[in-house]
Image 1 (cartoon, rainbow, N blue to C red):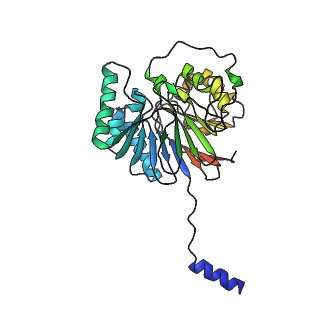
Image 2: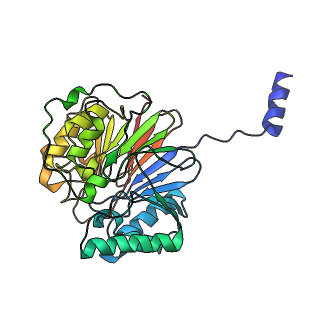
Image 3: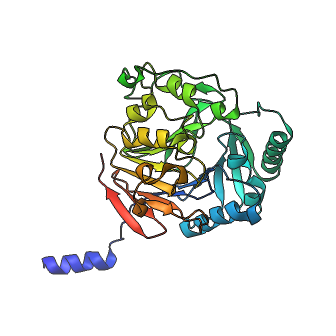
Length: 336
């Protein structure tokens, strides 16, 4: 009788849908940023568009990653700041994929012919294609299925700690401030992306002093599972006061062959308490063997490369898998 009931259930009972993952693609734009998030709901968020030119190189790479992810439109395009390696590719991308919502920190505070052109292209594109959303610290970008909390924008940071954060940051001791950065880097939109218990941080190109303000004297963010290295792993960002306090288990470095991945910044990440692995988009030529991870963890080992990406898959229970698209090497990390 029991067997008969089981068979009836298998035939007539509706199958429960499998729980979906959050997918993240760290796309190679040669030392800029283009990070594609795909929520379990199917909505997408792209952070930055890489460079213009190069025969549509970066737009093509973003479109290829989107196709692999089953994404046919960008629901939210977040531009962290108005530099050529972050907003430069917007026109070329818009010619390949529809964009619904355009997110930024507000007006461009830099001037100059190239800067004005970049900002003009950005504003023209969003006026033609979608809605414009200006965010400030504390705001949430409404991507269905994940939480995207804005931590920094337009030179400001969250005034109050996030839930569960706010403890004194012992790594602030010995911090040495640097000359004030008046560039767009310091105005970067920085975000904490949460899916269940999983937490990942992306601070764009936020620079040294601003990172300190976010994390000192008290840590306003808490800890994260994955840290996308700030400013491509350049030594004008990423002090221990933030990296070590975030206590990441895995770091992703979106560097280029000759941009980012500087030995000083790499060593800060490498020495971070609790770090299990660093994954790099490129082998950093200036770093040599002592300041690069083994080739297994590097998506592009040659300077002239095919633009391979690193993929992050986050399961609903908080565990996650990182995959190198060059060699299909994957490693899974248990939920913290």
